[in-house]
Length: 102
Image 1 (cartoon, rainbow, N blue to C red):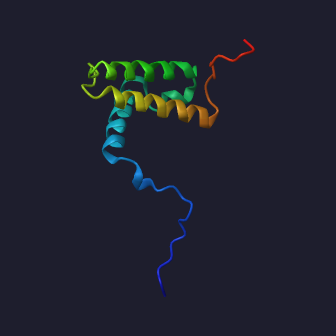
Image 2 (cartoon, helix red, strand yellow):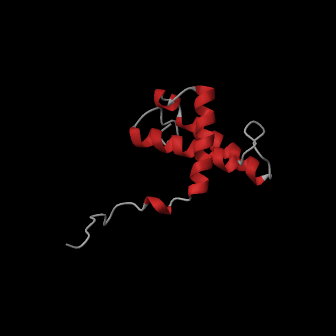
Image 3 (cartoon, helix red, strand yellow):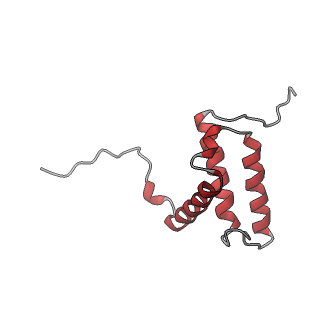
């Protein structure tokens, strides 16, 4: 009998850069210690995470390292964006983006 594995069309998880994901996991663990486990699932305004991500990206553009974690601001931005994406996918929190009808 020959080997079979039905994985056509499934995401190739090994394509995710492991060093980057590991660093983001470290940042998320620091966030857990600071804010509590799965704190974001309590819901909040989405733009708070978008603002945080943008601040971290701007700090990275200025060649800064996060003073609290001593890690790349990109890892903090990625963590914020993953949390924001999780809120969007779960339909949690408040979508407070501007809309033309406001």
